[in-house]
Length: 345
Image (cartoon, rainbow, N blue to C red; front, side, top):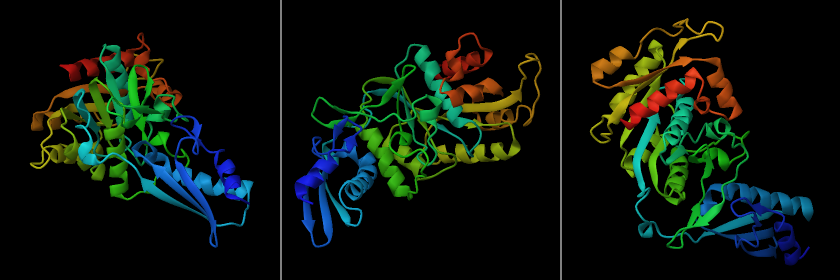
């Protein structure tokens, strides 16, 4: 086995950002064969960081499979990124940055966010969406973009950027684009925050009227990263009418209204407000309670922006990658369109 043999094997690994192999892409700097096995030296920039671990695993696998299953493979990385202080202000061309949060999981926050983003695009606005739920990214499935790999692009000042996916008029980046969908993201808080900063600063977002952040449930390092890094126009809190969920709404309100955070709350969205079966469209069954969020909204002086019913097709459309708001003739689309108009107002 020679160093050239190793180089040829490494050419089998494709960089998903530009569809070139990692040797032609300049990611592989050099290779060496030593007493401890094979050493591969990499040079990476900002756009490669999100997929670095995947590249390192692929390097070990391709050398072991193609050349020698017993040999030890080590990779070494040199960063050649632009210094942070040379970067422009993050998201400088975005007019309105809005966080979508929930006190607890399972309330349909991501479903509301996906449909709200598409609804804003249908109203004629330029819209972006960051799937900031790095531990449970669901936007790739809700937009039918599973398996999508972001490409690289170059800014006017020569910086390498990450090209967001674009579908239904919405630009979007998600942790789900950079990891195996069957593998959990076992990251400590700082690692997750660093990834989020990466797609904030190096995403090629361009000019947008609205950029939505689908935050993880609860309160975490991710929330702090967003509120400390960006100037948010406001936050939306999604909940169900259930008392357990409403108790966590108060925590979310207090977090955004904390003196050190001080982000305006645009309103509450009550999801799964009632159940209406398709065969009885005029019937309403209040499975989780009726108007549970209205007293909280009144107590804290926050608008109740919308009440979205529990409708089977909303779930089915989310699983199919076709948000319900796309169907102009459906009643559920009107709920999300009215929510979008309320946000604009």
